[in-house]
Amino acid sequence: MLYFRRLWNLAGILCVFNAPLIFSMLQLSVWAAAMIGILLAVAFVLINIFPLPQRYPSRRLGVLRGGTDLLILFLIAVTLEIIWMVCVGILWMPEPIDWPLFWINAGITLLAASILFWNGMIRVYCTSMQLGIKRRIVGALLGWVPIANIIALFFICRVTSEEYRFETEKQRINEERKDRQICKTRYPLLLVHGVFFRDSRFLNYWGRVPKELVENGAEVYYGQQQSAASIADSGAELKERIQEIIEETGCEKLNIIAHSKGGLDSRYAISCLGIAPYVASLTTINTPHKGCIFVERLLGQVPAGACQALANTYNHALRKMGEQNPDFMAAVSDLTEQRCRALLQEAPDQPGIFYQSIGSKAACARSGKFPLNVSYHLVKRFDGENDGLVSVDAMQWGQRFTLVSVPGRRGVTHGDMIDLNREDIPGFDVREFYVQLVHDLQQRGL
Image 1: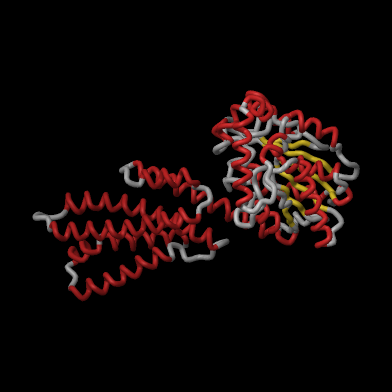
Image 2 (image 1 turned 90 degrees about the vertical axis):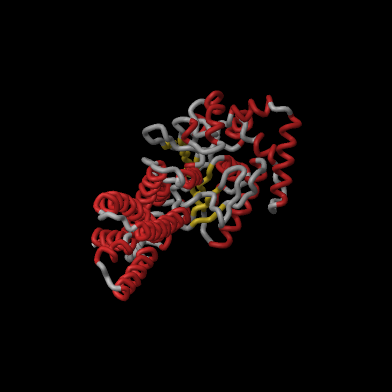
């Protein structure tokens, strides 16, 4: 039925493209041509509004699928139209050629094709999460280059088609296991962000992960600590947040999942600030437990004045955005190898808490987006294999360590582990990874 609908749409579009020429060849009367023309115009409008009238998993995916189908119809229709114009319009048209009719037909074809193209492009540009800014810019620039625009459009259709297929499959899986509530843990989850970021409901630090966890039964809260502060200060903020959640919900404990410096903040709060009785587990994601040697080297080589100027600029900007006491230098200094190794002694693991760490590695600099593609080589020089910021060796800590990797030259970066760019990485489904991570906590009775 789906393919029949597409063929029907394609036939209607080709009739619209060539309406004047067809009417002339059939020698229709003015009234007959007008009636059929009105019907074709209505059909063309309906095709643009409802490319494939069917039920979709979500409104966004419906618009994305419709836009993709419009672009595919555009590619096929324009290709067939060129063949038609060459074979029929020039080679087989009897002499003399009716040039006014030819140009009227060409004008209608161009107008209808433009509507079809821009309708599809606007739909996919506004709804696709996988095209990215770079692909959108390249597509827009190549749109004016013959041949190259066809190749770019083919690539866009391939990306959006795969995105629709992937998202539809994920929603099908979630629907099938909905009743099982595989992420409904005994204790709620507390997601703790890393340095230089804040929890925001408008641009979630954890990307699409929290929504996926909630759909599978999880109860999710956020750390809400400041973006840049010392480990001790951030740990104190986390302590207050944990106490607030305990009082608000009546739950006995929390399962903490912390990314990057958030893992250090959480360890300090647990071991040094007395909240161990309220924590069931701590899972750290790409946390520099043994520190970052490259940070230490940079702080030793960059002039103190330059460091302070950068810190002052950052602190001033964050105060304008509402933070009370941002401290850039304290946050960075606490990531050095010396400070993190000292923390290993100051904040030992507490009994009764399940500790585990997770890490990933980038295959090369091109694995990550800016600035991770720049920092990768610097980190590799001083720290070895890394995720663009933290070395694999520094991430290892706790009762269990899991290293995430994918075949090929893509790798999984520091930002990929929190779905920062909302990118679907071949071989690594970040949302499903967290679902299974939390499901494991559920299986442990936590």
